[in-house]
Length: 376
Image (cartoon, rainbow, N blue to C red; front, side, top):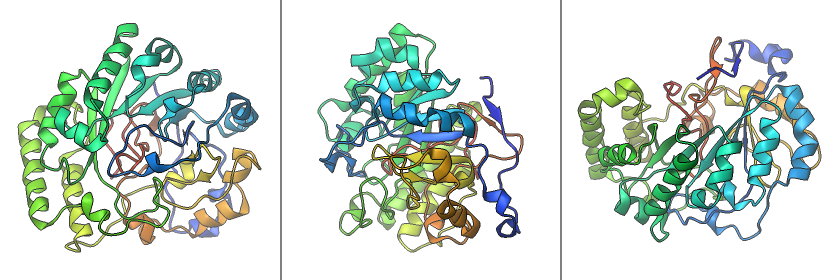
C-alpha cells in the first residue's frame, strides 16, 4: 500500500523536557474519532454498552474542525467508538474526511456492516473487525445473538460490493478465549480476512466506561488465574510453531516476542512479573477524540480539552497538553507501564494501513490496522 506520510523522528529525546519546541505539535498524522459513544454489543471486557446518554459527532460539527485537521496534516482517521455505525451520518463523516485526502478506517464490531455495506465501501479505505474466537466463543464474549454469524454476513456484504476491500481482525485475549488463539486464527482464515492481531485485555485502566477503574470481581472475569496463564503460554507457543508461515507472512501480525508478551501481561496482573511500558510516542503523533468531544493523548491518559470549546489544533498545543508531554516519561509513568498496547512511529516510518492504532474496549485499543509489525 502507498504510504500516506513519512514522519520525522517523534521519539522523545533524553533532554526533551528542555526543548519546548519538541512538544509543540505541528503534524498530527493519526486521529481516532468516535462518531458515537454507544455500542450494541454487551462484551464482558467493555462497559461502553452501559452508556445511556447518547452522544455523536454530526457532520455540521465535524465541518468546524476540518481546517484544524488540514493545518495539523492529519493523514489517517480511525472511526472507532462505541460502535461508529450507530451514528446514522457515519458515511457522511467518512466522505468529508476523505475529501481532505485522509485515509479512513472503520473500526467495528461488525454487527451493522450488512445494512450499509454498499455505501460504506465507497467512503472508507479499509475495515477492522473485532473477532474474539470461533463462533461459540465469539458469541459468548459478545453476548448478543448470532454475533459471529452477523459479522460473517457483514464481511461477505462488503466483499460483494468491493471484492478487494481489506478487512482485518483484532482479538483481545482474556479469560473466555485464552485457550482459543489457534482456532481464532483459523476462523479469520475461513472468513477470508486479510490479517489478525492479538493483545491482552485491559483490566486496570478507567478507559471504555470504567470511570472508577476495574473493581473485583469484575477484573477477575477477564484476567487469568495461575493455571490459565500456563494454558495461555502453551497456546501461544503452539500458535507460534503451528502457524509459523502465517507469522512470517504477516497474516498473524505479532512477532513471537509480542505474542509472548501477552502472556507476561497476565503474569503482571497476578503479581508474577513487573509491568514494563511498551515503546510508545502516541501523545506526540496522535489524538483520540470521543463522541462527547473530549481530546486525549491516547485512550488511557486523561483528556486535556474538548473540541466543543476549541479547535483540535488549539487543544493539542494548549498549555495543559504541552505540560503533559513535557513531563511524560513513558518508561516510568504508571499508566504507560500497565498499557496493553502502543503506538510508535519512528523516523522514516510511514503512516499507512499497518501502523498500530487503537481499538476500543480493552478488546482492542491501539490496535493493529495492518500488516506491519507492532511497536516494541
